Length: 145
Image 1: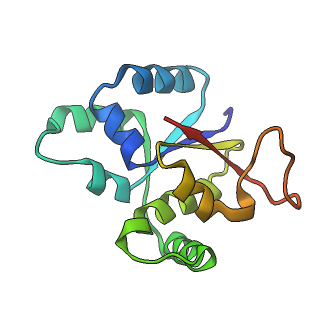
Image 2: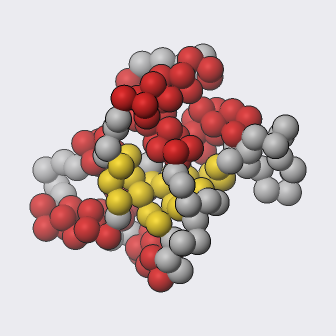
């Protein structure tokens, strides 16, 4: 394996809509044997009546949906507390970050248009290329899509 890509719900939505850039990006990742995952909760946020069930099934067959376990839920809750955030606006983002932190295949990159919120939730776990690692605890990169 050559790392992990974690999609937030908007990145997953782009994939469901067959966005050319996202589809190409994930095709390259899968060719490079990069594990592509989503937090299972992102399915709920990204799926809606305009998504064809066959497209959803196809997309999910190419990704790994990580279920929300009690451990991941507690990690997500702690991430929210550490960042001084709460509520449904940030809950799924916190689950995405918890999923990224738990990924066994490093390096881990979260694909999201919401770089600020994901970065805030990561705190000192955010890997800032070119700026060095903060205290050796940086673990996850964020890539804007």
